[in-house]
Image (cartoon, rainbow, N blue to C red):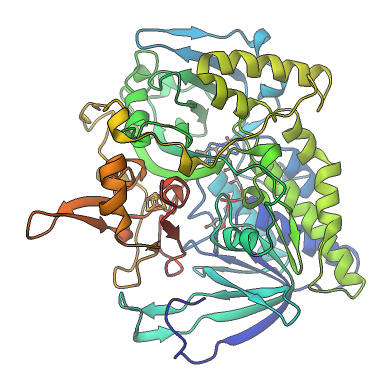
Length: 560
Ligand SMILES: Cc1cc2nc3c(=O)[nH]c(=O)nc-3n(C[C@H](O)[C@H](O)[C@H](O)COP(=O)(O)OP(=O)(O)OC[C@H]3O[C@@H](n4cnc5c(N)ncnc54)[C@H](O)[C@@H]3O)c2cc1C
Ligand code: SF4
């Protein structure tokens, strides 16, 4: 439902064959494959892609060490065509960090499916910009700066497209000068490719009960800085991961360092959102990790040039919802196709876009519309996405149950078994038990954590780093972090958990301040939001809903 009441004029409507929400790798791959099939078969298929970022790539944040399996299938000559993915992985290193030292795990002990051999390092945002150009060349219509805020249902209950948000509403929800009504984009099929925790995907999963047979989806928060390091420290093609310090055994996660391009290093941490301690701050853990004796020297003499954060899905195989509903499908990370131990999802996002496009093209050619694209789901389960996810299905549950150290060893054994007998392994599938919103312990039963102050050279405070994300929102617009009950943060979350939103939000959006009479007040600095979606996932009361703000707002990531 629109948030601005019913008194507005009707929206104009445009018709397409396929409407795609999200210009990430999944959505763009779908657009490209649809247009390739149309050209190869001498047919015209109209395709529109909506992107809430100010340009394609502006909201993309990834590692990224990329498995080219999807790209090879989508554009086999992507290398010759100049895709911005030129650094081939040359070396893989994995370290376990302790407070005072580090241990390298020999590559021979690592399960082969964790190897980055044959992968490429680059910016997924830049790759999406390039894919966007390829899609536009094929005459897909791409509209950056437009968020899809609502799905449209036909008379039979199937999805028949989406509506973009109104532009020019004030904070009070009333039209301001220059107000523009949103548009209805109607399609025979609608692809939801919004990435992890998509806002429409969340509504559609609920509406069509798509998750009734699967485990709860699990998530992580990824925090990333892009550094230009001193040339003598740059090792193009080096992929390095760590687990352990500064995270304790009960807190899952790890770091990545990818060397590529012009002395660039992508430095990041993924922290599993099933953590228990409400005093934990993922942002400050990330800052602390950089100070480890084995990590710090890399950054000396270097410069942080960008910062951002984004949630990622971690439930994998057991958490895949039904992928199709009447009139549409979930693609990429909106469906949860991330391979967690590999920290890779872009290859599966592209593969899912290809499968969905092929199913929709065949259906449209048969004169069908607004029905279920079962062929898409069948292709996912019969193909490389299922193969990729099935063999790592027990890794995340083992980490969650047995902690980082024992879980790491057991998951390693399980991955070896799945290498030897692919997709079967030891023969069992462990379940995810609860959603990440239900894992926090009460503040009174948890150990407070004292984080060191940032030094401004290697470690930074949130607001300083935020200025390196290019985040910008029109301030006079309705707040896009919607509280189901505005009393919960102070009346419930503060006494029970110390209001953890202050700590898990990587952009200083949430604060508890004092009102004029010295009472605590929950403040939402919505203009800082980097659209990571963590609050929508982790709030212990499930009281926060992230809805798209005015299109074009949010981060303006460059090279992320
Ligand atoms: C820190 C981190 C590190 C990672 N490292 C790697 C790696 O090294 N290798 C790898 O392969 N994968 C990695 N991943 C995962 C990878 O980034 C994802 O799997 C991939 O981006 C998923 O692609 P997608 O197209 O499904 O979604 P996304 O890439 O998230 O794209 C979704 C797009 O849809 C837009 N959108 C969302 N909602 C709307 C809406 N309602 N209206 C309009 N537009 C909308 C968004 O702005 C975005 O541009 C990493 C992820 C993170 C967070
Ligand atoms: S408000 Fe929510 S979505 Fe926005 S940056 Fe903070 S945690 Fe992420």
